[in-house]
Length: 229
Image (cartoon, rainbow, N blue to C red; front, side, top):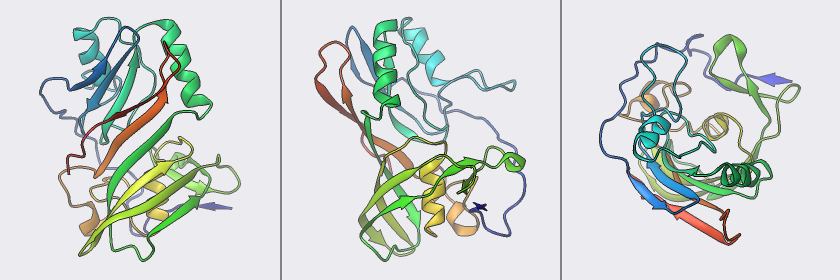
């Protein structure tokens, strides 16, 4: 069974993406001979886009300052927070395995629309691409890949809830679709949220911490970026 977890009145096509990335200096959280950890701002692509005018991105900015930076993983353009880069091919391969084997652990903070009734929970809904509505993702028990998210409420205010999210898998738009499936879209989500929920200056989703093994020492390390909202 396939379920398009989008409001019935949502448009079939995503509005044109106007790319106007924020300017400002790189925020480097940590660097050593093997890795560089950066606090990515919201609105900046992780890697160059396919269309004209979208070459400015985090990896090109970082490589202008640190020529040896190598991509390990990505964050959505509108998501901010911790990203790690390798400085050697060996470190890149090691860190790639940390993510592929799910040894890397990530936490996110989000502001979602509406007041969640429960204090915590677990979402287990498989996801796949909604091809007619790319880049949307959708829940599909027939075609989807396994996707699980743990969540915990860390604050409530009128019409919104602040949650800490722990993705157990790393599917595209996983947190955004899982929160929408619970009836609480992430505030400022221009793809999945509609009405007042989408009315915000940015997507209220931030990669707060990343924990993994260091490629040089094997020690478990955690990097954190302060939540900007």
